[in-house]
Image (cartoon, rainbow, N blue to C red):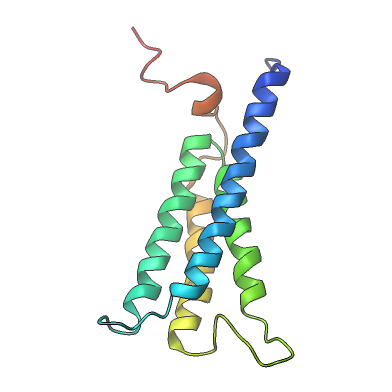
Length: 137
């Protein structure tokens, strides 16, 4: 097993930290926009968010070369989404118990779990070792 320098370890930690922040941002934006009904049917935006969640989580897992990339991004989204689904004392609720809310919340959980399972389970990160195609002569 090769040793990583402190700079590489710090860069990897920063990358995973940014993926977590990306998941949190997706959770906040998705929580408030999953049920927009301007000129679209009710479920279109919720289903669009499922596709986005799946794509971003899977992309993070593939780019980082491990399931941890998908897991960290998914954990950020899940943390915010679960907090948004709790009813506050004043009765405020961000992700409500209607059909778009259920599709967004439970479908999102299925989407991030599927992205986690489809991510590579081992291998090196493109960030640390470069893209495999670029190192070939």
